[in-house]
Length: 192
Image (cartoon, rainbow, N blue to C red; front, side):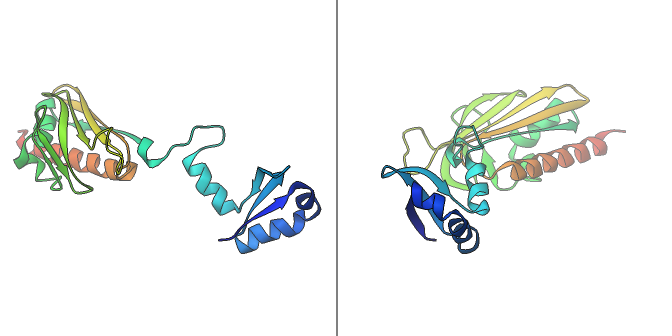
C-alpha cells in the first residue's frame, strides 16, 4: 500500500487521476495545504475499516474499549441458572473452557485469554464479575466480564457484558444460548 502527499493545488487539478489511483491501485493520498496534512483520499474499503473503529462523529473505539452486552431469558429457576455457572459439575456440561471459583477473589480461567483472572464481584444468585489483566498492564488491555441475573422460579434473565478486548458478541450469544438450552433441558427433566 502506497501513501503519497499531494499539495492542494495539484490535487484540485488532478482529482480524476488521484481518485483512480486510490480506487483501482489502493493508494492513499494525503492532500496538504501550506505543507501540512489537510485531507485524505482513501478507498471505500479503507473508509469502512476506519468507520468500524470510529463511526463518523463518534469517538474512536479500539479493542481496549470494546463493549458487548447480550441478554437471554431462560425458562428455569434462579437457583438452576446460578448453579449452572457457579458449580463446576453443572458448568462442565455446557461451558468446558471456563474455570471459575464463584467467590470474590476466586480464580477465573478461560480459553480465549492466557492470563489468570479473578472474580472481582460475586453475589449468590445475582451477579458474578471476572477480570483478566489490570489497568497497570501495558502489553494487554484488561477485560472484565459481568454476568447478572434477574428473575424468579419460572424465568430468569441473564445479562452478560464484556468490556475490553475479547471474543465479541457472537461468542456471548452462543454461550448464553448454550446456557439456556442446558438449564431448560435440566428443568424439563426434573418437572413431573
